[in-house]
Length: 171
Image (cartoon, rainbow, N blue to C red; front, side, top):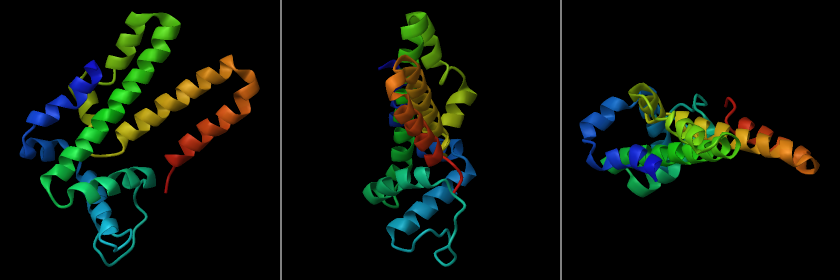
């Protein structure tokens, strides 16, 4: 709950100009491609030339948000909210991993390490795929640790880890 408050609650009072300033310029490249996909123009930035210069899983995360919010400021707020929830989910998983093995204090330190500094929080909420990567890495780590404890299912879990990491591979 604390991670959700830390990552999502500020969006409720974040002014639009501050939100735009916190986003990387490449984030707007992604947003435009998502808009063009929704408009039926395909994977293009300018509506004319096709592009493959994007991380597909992140783009496919943005497309439904564009469908819901369209060309409004809510699109940016939704992107930041989704990133906040991804960071909260990753933090929750990190807490569970560390708390189970090292105790609750270590779990709390692990979880809050994602948002402990202003720079860390800015990187995870910049409109880019960073929060998705952190979530996928946390899930992959959890699957790996679970694999060590359940050797009969190890091959399937290793394949699941490989699949997750390939989802985030280059386009």
